[in-house]
Amino acid sequence: MGALVVGWVLADHWLFGAGVGLVLLFGLWRAIVIGRAVRAWGYAERDRDLLVRHGLLVRRLSIVPYARMQFVDVTAGPLERSFDLATVQLHTAAAASDAKVPGLRPAEASRLRDRLTALGADRAEGL
Image (cartoon, rainbow, N blue to C red; front, side, top):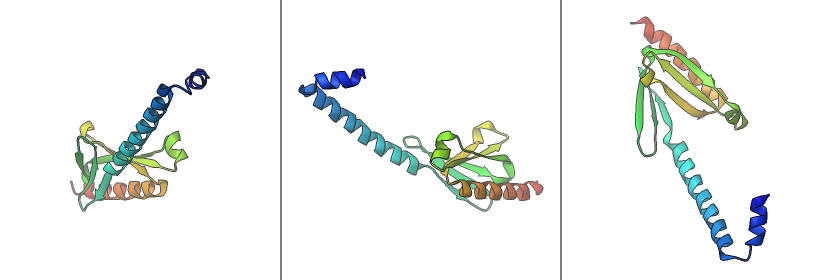
């Protein structure tokens, strides 16, 4: 309510226009950064391992061998559920090598979980 009163008082002042312009510029910048951050996530299923890449400024490529996976989680918080999305989390014995693939449709997340679980069980038998 206070912002509305201040905006009404300063409507004829040049600072009000500058403030609105700055808010719009910040919104445009955030939309561009969010779009780039979403496109920075990716994964690829290979014969023996799963590649997961992410990062805007610092790019990170994680290679998780199927035989080293202990379990695979599919999670969806309230915000993800509202956008019909889910996250696949891979857990290994080494905490540093845990990887996640966010922003998947629930059907694709379930398919990936089932495939990774099956491949992990097949590969672990050979150890």
